[in-house]
Image (spheres, protein in one colour):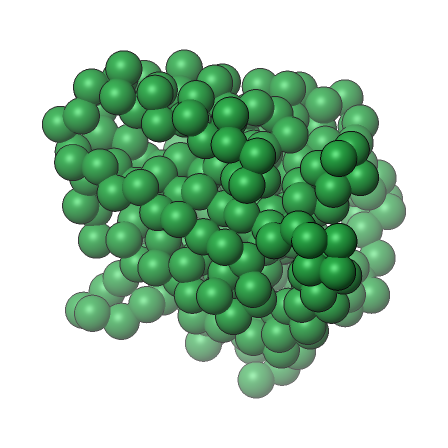
Amino acid sequence: MAAQLLDGRILSAQVEQSIKTRVEALAQKGCVPGLTVILVGDDPASQTYVSNKEKACARLGIRSRTLRMPKDISQETLEKAILEANEDPAVHGILVQLPLPKHLDESRALALILPQKDVDGFHDVNMGRLARGEECVVACTPKGALYMLKSAGIPLEGKEAVVVGRSNIVGKPMALLLLQENATVTICHSRTRDLAAQTRRADILVAAIGKPRFITADMVKPGAVVVDVGINRVDGKLCGDVDFDAVSQVASFITPVPGGVGKMTIAMLMDNTVSAAERAARQA
Ligand code: GUN
């Protein structure tokens, strides 16, 4: 393999270590960080993600509570749960696991979360502030991906960054973060003409499309840094949006799946939750 591995397992363990110290400092002030997760329905992928979040909270001394709700709940019931968590001073972070069942209004639900408790960074206020380049809660996956790039000392200023995928959860915030780092950013998507011509221009290539092994070696410039945000299951095995074996022969740095950005997403959620608790403790 020519590329150097950007290892999310090692890095997230380091981040978790420093979060533990912060949780201990909060405990000295009588504050235990609290995260409420709302999980609607029985989507297997969502259940796995939520279970990983619960385990991380347990490791770090964060009090977590998961509200598991049946898939046919009403908008009103969902909103009531959010409002109750908003009111609860022991809850510092609120996360509504996405996607929600189709009959529920996701935007309305997310907009109800208090921006300071929105540890996903999906609230209009946080997204808007990110777009303005102002301080805000940043979405966990793009925040984790950027953290990996910075920790490896990869220069971003003036670089051509190409983000494949325009989701609100990853693609758009990722592009905004790279822009803030003074990269020249292109966002590509399913309607982009000659996608490979775009990806081949990239010094930094972020794949967030949700299609297994979609980015092939011929789509990658030699020496590019490749960040794989995809989590796909093929024949029971996890794989990313990047054809790892082939692309790692071409890239200079690459994130694996599993053990890459996914680990950082969880670490950043813990970071956002503890930051929310620290803010609350300062104001108490
Ligand atoms: N579904 C997939 N990724 C995420 C995430 O980062 N946060 C939430 N709430 N739902 C998701």
